Amino acid sequence: MVQTPNLIGKTIAITRALNQAQETAKMIEELGGKAYIIPAIEFKMPDDLTPVRTFIEEIEAKKASYVIFMSSNAVEFLFKEAAILNLSKKLEDGLNKATIIAIGPKTGETLKKYGIKLDFLPREYSSEGIVETIQKMGLSNEIIYIPRVKNAGPTLREKLEALKLKVQEIPVYEQILPKDGDLAEQFVNDLASGSIHAIIFGSAQSVRNLKKILENFLPTNRIKLFMEKVTIVAIGPETAKAIKEVGLRVDVIPKSYTFNAAIEALIDYWKQDH
Image 1 (cartoon, rainbow, N blue to C red):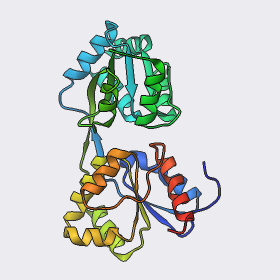
Image 2: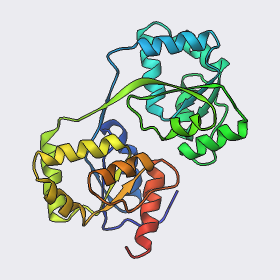
Image 3: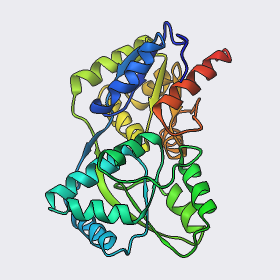
Image 4: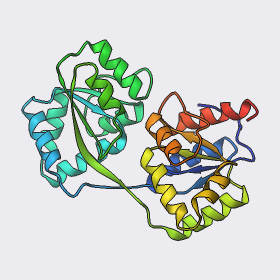
């Protein structure tokens, strides 16, 4: 982690869900910056838990030998849903019989909290790192199960399918639009005044949601005008693609798909006199 206070005088907007933004805000403040929390996303459980029940039954029957977790959210929601279905023990036992891959150490820590062993952690905390790990394992014609957000981007699935693997994605949570209008209105005012220096997007849905939020107060051309003054950070290619699709540019993409890596990449970008 970067230790020197490299963010003095900088205000960085964080679009994470409110219950997850505090950790990122703390890092920004420790580096001398001001964290501006503008939640562009909330998480909820899917209405239909049938896919989760099916997954737990398959993993208990040892039909699911390889499981990838792409976020701590996926782990937390999966275990909440298993508890609702009275299948917690079956889920724990099944996962501990399978080969488990986590995208990063925080996801690994969340698995450990629930008593699940972690078998593989990629060298690079990204979809590319996951694919590299799978390639080194030499898998072929296996089924890879991925409990993850509903309507996730296709990048990982397509890359795994290109390796002749079958992919089963289990929707364990959904991303929805927050409803705090007062917070959004203040953000628009601060954006217009030029007091926000950077904004970090962690998912494609957070990009689309923030656009919807801003459009309640501003026409699209004004949004683009104000965002031209802001350094835009995208965590991952799916997020970068969504930013470009709404007509904005992407300035920074960290190599690892974490908010900590995003902040470090932002500091490096600004050091280059951008």
